[in-house]
Image 1 (cartoon, one colour):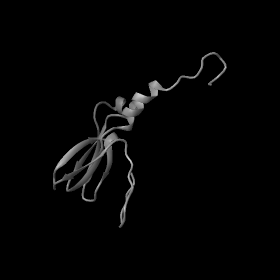
Image 2 (spheres, rainbow, N blue to C red):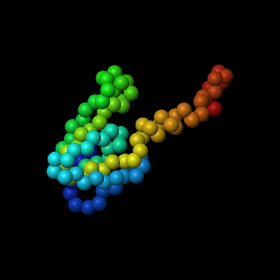
Image 3 (spheres, rainbow, N blue to C red):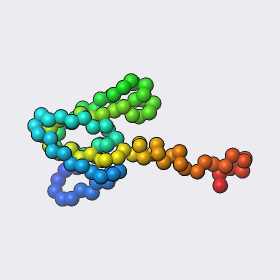
Image 4 (spheres, helix red, strand yellow):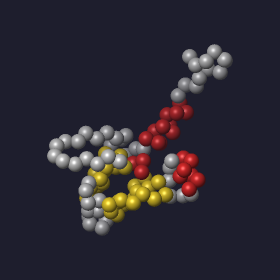
Length: 102
């Protein structure tokens, strides 16, 4: 994580659209960690696993973050993991004729 503070503009990049959600004091939402972008001061968070430890450790998935207001939470509409899961099977495979990659 990276903490940014001070005055001025911050440029943030994400995969997909960024959605801002205002949380009232004590209001809580749960977000998959792959969709998190940022949150404002005042928001507290707790990361926890969903599912078994084996799936969490081997796949990197299965982690969510519980965020509690007050403050603003910014999420992205798509996850980089889902994009890579779609893209990698479509990438060209190396040649298998013994001559190496082309």
